Length: 116
Image 1 (cartoon, helix red, strand yellow):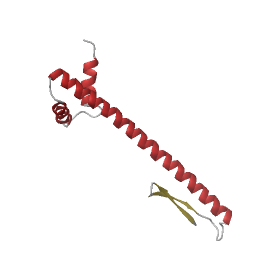
Image 2 (tube, one colour):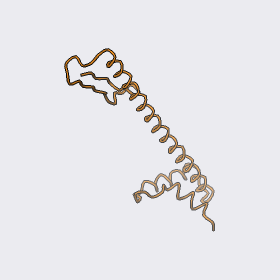
Image 3 (cartoon, rainbow, N blue to C red):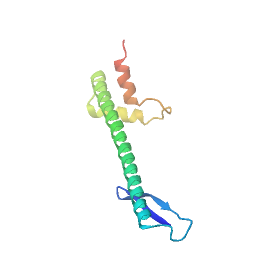
Image 4 (tube, rainbow, N blue to C red):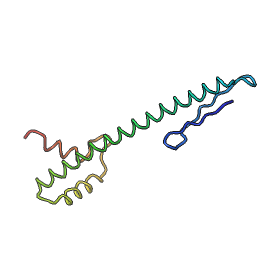
C-alpha cells in the first residue's frame, strides 16, 4: 500500500491510496508515478478551489453593485441619506423571502428600470 496526502492551501483535502495484490508490488517507478498522480490531483483540486473562489467574488461584486445602485435610487426617490437608505434595505431584506426570489436590491433596481 502507498498513500499520498493531497493538500490544497495548507489544508488536507484528500488522499490518493494505492494498493497492490502482492507483497512488494510497488517499485520505485510505481512510487514515482503515485507522486505524479497525487501532484496532478492536487493541481486539479487547487484549480477547482480557485475557480469557486473567483465565482464567489464575482457574485459578491455583482451584489455589491446592485446594493449601491438600490441605495442611490432610494436616496433620490425618498430624499433620505445613504445610511438611512442602506438601513431600509437591510431591514426589509431581513424579512423572509421566497426561495429563488431576486434580492431586494435587484428588485428595487429592476423596478426603477421598468418602463412607465
